[in-house]
Image: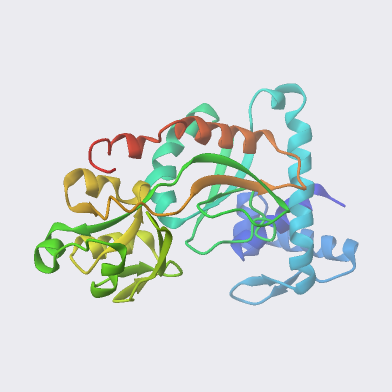
Length: 304
């Protein structure tokens, strides 16, 4: 089986375009199409559906894709273990992360990372939906939720502190809740899936099912709606720290901390060798966010 054919197949899966994948690998569309044909012939199955506009993977192609990526990753790891490859991580690093965290904290960090590792390319997928790390062929995922998949390893990057906030305009118009139970009388802007808020109280954990005055599937949109006075929301400090610093948002119910033990994690498949490029990226983020992360340092004296 030809390794370059595998590399081409993986790029076609990412681009859904034979010509574009071929250009990325410096081969003509005709040669790219011929290479895929040879790979399909060697395997005895059809890997892609071809149309005039785009290509898509067949069921066999979808099954074969993670194995093809694993073969390429193993080759990269082997090359990195000897000679010049042992000194510098190289290749393409595929990363998925929550959209808001990626935009606010990963994109600003990438120039420094790529300056350290100029032979690396990065393929980001930012989404507030949890994408499958293995099926998606990602090298690493940044997650802000508890790890439940035994096929994955995780390294903690930072604490993920969450608080309840409102804008000054909202407070002036509707007042502040004095207890968690008072939230039921207020307008709430919720992130989809986080409608139940758990608080630590003197009587133990109190769970409040908040009313959905407004619900959105993006953390930054929820924060921005809260800034506009649409209601009270639960937010991560990494998402709202500039607005808390500026006074656009104010912490409320500080005497009732949320009963959450959230963290930011770097997650990677447990059945793969940890390639140097993956280790370099995880170590870089762990150092950048180590101790008290910079967004929480900025909130000393602002947030309890």
